[in-house]
Amino acid sequence: MKYNIALVPGDGIGPEIVSAAVEVLKAVGDKYGHEFVFNEYYAGGCAIDKFGEPLPQETIDGCLASDSVILGAVGGPKWDDVPNHLRPEKGLLAIRKALGLYTNLRPAKIQPALADACVLRPDIAAKGFDLMIVRELTGGIYFGERGRNEKGDAAYDTESYSTEEIERNARNAFEIARKRKGHVTSVEKSNVLETSRLWKETVHHLQETEYPDVKLDDMYVDNAAMQLVRDPSFFDVIVTSNMFGDILSDEASQVTGSIGLLASASLGDSKRGMYEPIHGSAPDIAGTGLANPIATILSAAMMLRYSFDLGEEADCIENAVNKVLEAGWRTKDIAAPGDENWLKGSEMKDKILAEI
Image (cartoon, rainbow, N blue to C red; front, side, top):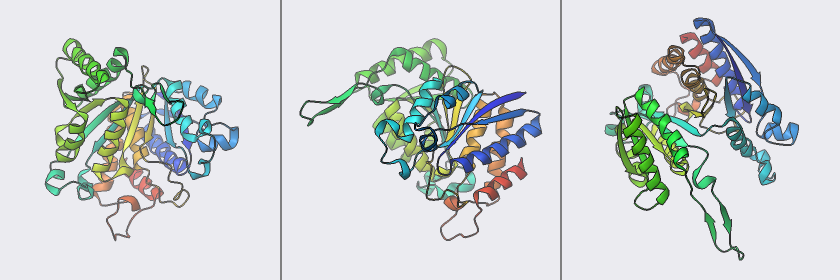
């Protein structure tokens, strides 16, 4: 089978980590008889430097013509002083819009080999957790009407959701839960917000009419934030709004203690998605060999699973990463304090390739 993949390496360590993911995908292709064809495009700061804008039309066209997209990272202090409409991050928002990506998947789990890196109490970490946050990506307060009064001493941001926006995001959550433990927690603030009341009504109606086999419970966002540090093992799939998901997914990633290992996916109505690590462009270590490629490699595994329905191949990558970590190999960012026996990013990639 042949798959066309658009690569958007971006800035900082982006080109290094995307290159590692490409090598891993080629190895998986050789093992299972697939052909992955890669085409590279510009976005972010590097696109500003070359084209004068953060997302050239060529990149949009190339991504739309692909079967899926792998993104590295965008941004850096070099572009801090550019006009707001030209900031590298604008390219990221624009590419999500152009591709029609409205759901973000953010897994968070304790890797058994890295349980000692978890910031939670040992008795909580010992229970382990493996959860998926399904975040609405293109609506809510981040995209609502906003402004200030004439004097400039008062401001407003408007939260707005339609039934359709809520339903399509929740449907993704229920479908994913069916492939996991069959448990969805809908997170909102329906005791205060009207949008949350609509959110709750819509999610419950969808569950009752289409997904009665999936367990559904509700949780206020403040309680969810507390439970993520008190007992994260309770959660399987969390579905929530754009702003709440933004906050909770960052909290969940930090709870694991290993941000360099966490992948993400952005999906829409088609099988085409965009897959990227959750960490930033880390320009301070670009070119030093210190960048950890695991999050991008695991993002590639998510692509195989969610865009191409290649579950066995995705398992192959994830198992290879687990074996390398269980063997005690670490990059600098996940090494124990004082441990100088760590691998450079390219060396970690080679260990994973050997397991594949």
